[in-house]
Length: 504
Image 1 (cartoon, helix red, strand yellow):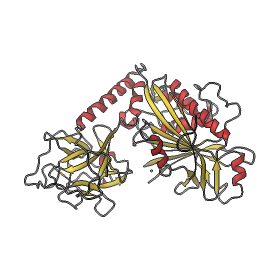
Image 2 (tube, rainbow, N blue to C red; image 1 turned 90 degrees about the horizontal axis):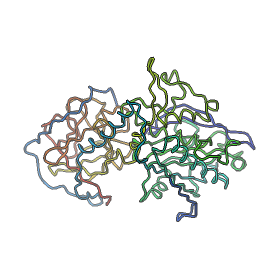
Image 3 (cartoon, rainbow, N blue to C red; image 1 turned 60 degrees about the horizontal axis):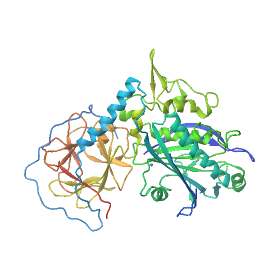
Image 4 (cartoon, rainbow, N blue to C red; image 1 turned 120 degrees about the horizontal axis):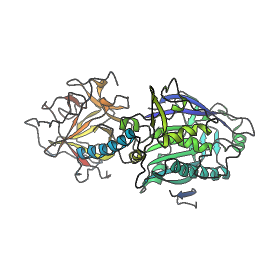
């Protein structure tokens, strides 16, 4: 799982509030009324060297002769597949690529024609009013709660307005009063609210609801927090990351967390919710925009990095924007990106990039998620199973749940539900006969970690590498690690994908 440690703030003086600073350091992370839970809730509408070039083979797999047909033994306590789901991976590819094609065509034509209906986009926003780290103890005041409500409204209405109402955002804001621990960022003094720490709250508030992303907010600034923590061990040393993005539309559910800080004088109360005027709104929008950056890979077009406001030399095709001079916290740049009007130069020509209307449907939570499946060998000899042992990917009589997500160009990512931050991975990205296949964290080598799911005429499916060879994920026998072999090799090369019904 990738994340950005890109913004932080330093400690202020007694009686003042924390000032924000920028820390552009990319690191890897190896991931209103009283409600029933006792918190206030308000809902407001609205791995090595890459191999050969990848291709998309279309030939069907030949079934090896003499394969066994015995039934699979179901171990006690293992997941139970549901009824076989009639899913055509070819149909999934066709439908998604149709949406991608329409968005790319609109981008290439510079066509800003509004959608006939806005995209309904749902944000779960959790305000954690009490967070701790060792002796450090940070809490929101009643004013902080009121301010966060204004920030959520400002986020919702200003983004809708900037996007010319091609998106209709609904924020569900809840306050959580439980004391929740912060996490120290690896190799740094910074603290943040880890998604894993608050997973139970996210599950609680997303249950039965359509949610596209999650934002969480804490408050560590203000006189009360200073008085409560001054002199304690770690105060002035450990500080909370201003904003952090850990998951985006390329994940099952996007997640960002940020520190509220205090409003700048003259910006609160809101004069107009449709105008982005609060600093915390800018931080929330910034982190959320990071979640959308997967569009660059999905669409294969120029799409701006959220930090492209820095301009040259890191972003040579973009002009430099200055915070608090052009607009508050680079919001001039954010507005241009969210309206698809950010200038990007290529020689003497200028292309306006960012969010075009037909890109908005592609940021929905389940657009790229195909579902959860149990994958069984077509000959009945076992289930495709992931583990953390010496043989990370094999077939066994233990059913394993696989979450399948569309990547791009007809490819899918398969991640074991038990290890959601891992995915099926071709060892060292080598497209060679008999190379091992296991599970591994994201490496950046998409060709080695994404797969073509080829529908066969007999209703089975083959798991094929996107490399030009078209070799297949193959398991010769139970307990032996999966390998890459050409079609027709000895072993299991055909699979039955069955929908997982959630039972154990």
